[in-house]
Structure formats: C-alpha cells, structure tokens
Amino acid sequence: MEYLVTALALAAATAGAQGPQGAPDRTRSALIADLTWVEAEQYLDTSTVVVIPLGAEAKEHGPQLRLRNDQLLAKYYADRVFAATPVAMYPMITYHFYPAFVEYPGSTTLRLETARDMVIDIVRSIARHGPRRFYILNTGVSTVRALQPAQDSLAASGIVMRFTNGGPRTRAAEDRLRQQPGGTHADEFETSMMLYMYPEYVDMSKAARDYHPGQSPLMRDSAAAARAGRTWSRTGIYGDATLATREKGRIVVEAHVLDILDEIGALRRTPIPR
Image (cartoon, rainbow, N blue to C red; front, side, top):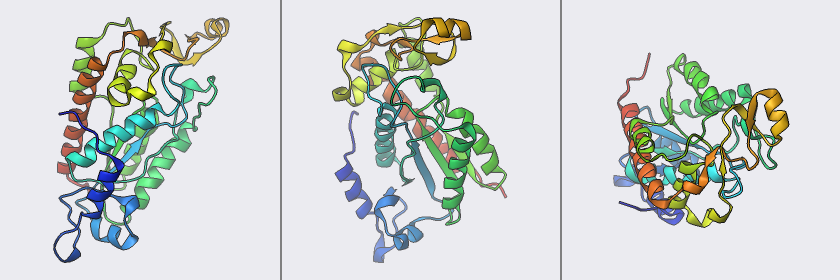
C-alpha cells in the first residue's frame, strides 16, 4: 500500500500514545521531541527500540535533485517506520561523513572521527535512560565508514546498534530493474525513488547521464580527476538519471521499507550483551 504519514498524524499518534491511567503505551511509536522529559522517562526502558534517522541536508545530488535529498529520504522512511512498528523516534542527524561531494557548492562533511563520535555520544546519552537497542536509519554510503566503528565501540559498552546498509529485497529489486551501466549517486535509482516519494522535488528536465568510472571522490575538473585517478562528474551525478521512472522508484522504495522493518524486527529480538 502506498501512503505517507503526515507530521500532523505523527503528532496526533504520539500525543495518544498513552495506556490506562496515563501509563506509556509501548505498543505505539513516540516522537521523543514532542514529549516532556517526564513522559520520556515513562516511555524509555530496556525494551525500547530507538530509531535515529540519518540524512544529509546539505549534500549535492546533481542538478535535478535538492541538496536536502537525503534528509527527505530519511524523513520518508522514518514516517513509514513510525507507522508500522513501535519505536522511539529521535531527531534526525543531518551532518555526517560525506567527503566525496565537497567540491560541489552547498555540500558539507564532517571528519570521519567526528561523525563516528557524534553517533556514539548521542546513543550513549540516550542509553543512560534505559534503551539498549538502536537503529540508525541511514541514507548514505560513505556514512557506513563511520557507523561501523561506532557500532563496534557501542557493543563494547553493552549497547546494540544496527544501521541501514541496503538489504536483500532492495538489492534484488535494483538488480532486476537496472538499465544504467553503473552508478550510485543521484542516479537512475535515487532519482526514481524521489519521483515516487516527493516528485515535487525532482526536475527531470535537468537529469543527465554522467557516468565516468573511477575512484571517489567526485571531481568537477576532468583534467584534475584524470591526474588524481578520481571520478569526473560535471553534474555531480554518478550514473544515468535520465532513466529514472516513478514505477522503478515505487518498487525499490517498497522493497527497502520491508528490508528496514525486517532489520528493526531482528534488532528487537537481539539479546542485550552483558
């Protein structure tokens, strides 16, 4: 089924997440930002699964998509998760490790160590109040380089943290639909996903085929890219965005939602290490 949970509906759901005599109803999701600290204390315990969306709000995505593209992806997936399974939804992280795009104006990145430690600090501060299971709803690729060591560090403290990094349904859907010769950024699939989620933020008249295999990061100067052995991209696209369609986006997004929900379900069943 195709649906979007609006901010108003989310707020209403959170406000109503109370059981008998005002006790927290942990069978329903809660937007932590909309609670008081007293209500948060009642809701959070060792059984709570905390979800923290991670999506860049200042990162280039070619001429056809907005700098906030990953933030929009993360919001969409967070809304779907919120409606489908009981979680404590925390505010989104909009800055992280995105070194491949800093040549394009508007793009930002943190140092690897900063991105890693920021996630560790956020999770540990929440864990003080009970939760031991965390899911980073990740919409990046380079972010994994910081999330993996963060996961390892938290595990040593008895905290289970998992993060989005593709999934079997998602990979199968992309393998079945792929027409572009290669690419992973602002490409056939990312543009298709946005056509399905938020078509108002896509300008297909500016979509381009811009695929020149090479090593990260992307570089705007072809001669400099050749000298450095890096990837040249005039547009900031890595792939063929002209092949994007809403139907491809629907198939990939719905597969990805199921993968994410499976991962959160598995996290919920994971024993907390002593």
